[in-house]
Amino acid sequence: IVQEAFIKAYQNIGRFEGRASFRSWIYQITVNTAKNKLRARKNDCVDIDNINLAIPSKAEWGLMEEDVKEVIQNEIDQLPDRQRTALSLRIYEDMSFKEIAQIMNCPYDTAKANYRHALIKLRHRMEENNMLRSWNEQDRSTAVAYRGRIAEVES
Image 1 (cartoon, rainbow, N blue to C red):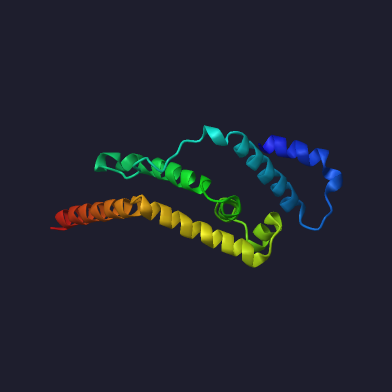
Image 2 (cartoon, one colour):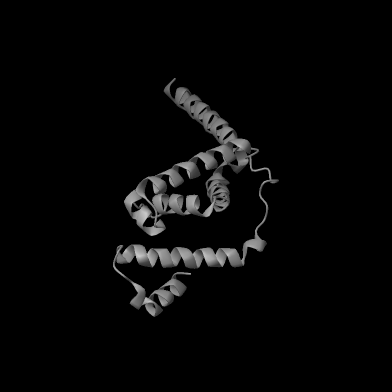
């Protein structure tokens, strides 16, 4: 995708008007290229709404980090384009809302609102699937067991 985006940027360098930063212009080309790729393979997606995503046992705790990343990414992929873009730019690219607004060609407050709505939707979807509750319960039981071991060592 990145290689394709750079080829497109090179072919269209004459269209760069300088209204936004060059970084924003290149990034927008990359985002659009990625969106086009996703649209092309949209039918290859699996419906994850019917999959139970809760972690059933402590034996899987060590594998949870990778599973969590995959589940969260799947949920992010389900967000509307503008919310997904704002969230990805903010979290993965560590961009300011001003930069996000430039890339998305929208007002600052709109970029911020898209990010906020994305977070709210993610939390809601994860709560719907009981993912947050099961992970929080797992955290608590691990913490209790850890404190128990510390108490045994101290006595």
